[in-house]
Amino acid sequence: MIVKVLKQADIDSQMAEEFIKVINSKKHPVLGLATGTSPLGVYANLVKANKEGRVSFKNVTTFNLDEYVGLEGTHNQSYRYFMNENLFNHIDIDKSKTNVLLGVGDYVSFMKKYDKMIEEAGGIDIQILGIGSDGHIAFNEPGTPFDSLTHETALTEQTIKDNSRLFNDISEVPTRAVTMGLKSIMNARKIILVATGKNKAKAVYGLIKGPITEEMPCSILQKHPDCTIYVDEEAYSLVK
Image (cartoon, rainbow, N blue to C red; front, side, top):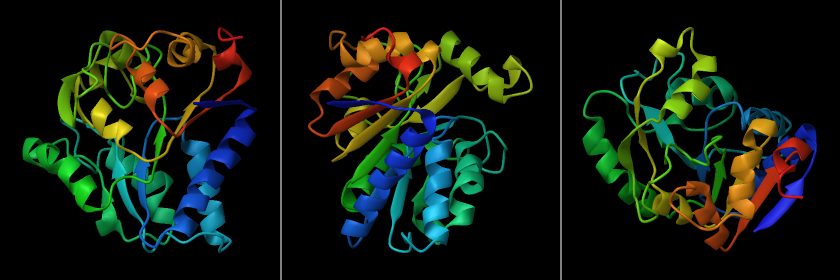
């Protein structure tokens, strides 16, 4: 595990460069993508690089980590909507190659074949992650088995509270989600994770220094052979 302590702008640009390096080095790159506020700067940098001709997404396939159960892809808080608005609509990607878990309809059947779809695409070359204040990655809450594959899960009170900032009212936040499992994530060849702000400090400590335990899901990343953690000073404050 490599840890880089940087300012926000440098985190965003360096993480974007990690993606660009992978995309430009492979014939059919497969990207693992995340939502939330953490990767927004990274995606903005990728859009800029695409417009400048430094990278093309024409041969790229993507798989997103998760989706809320109960939200249509057109809902402004769904993760399909988020990806379209913040990345896919602004780059030269074939949207039929962008895969986001379903939250409505026969989402269970789609969820059950998701890991097979990733495998058939060649596996994820690079996966970006954020981290929850309780140490969850994707929607793998504390207690999620390390050998979990894509599954449906109930969201903890803490996660619902944390995510309520994006909704008009906490009562609007879905209480369930579908998510890639911890084993699904660990199958990625390369992982990059971003954590900023003091509210992530406890989780970052568990990620880097804490024991490897299912009560701190992110701690499994200590076992990944190619994982880089990008943090700011506040998120890193308890590790020093």
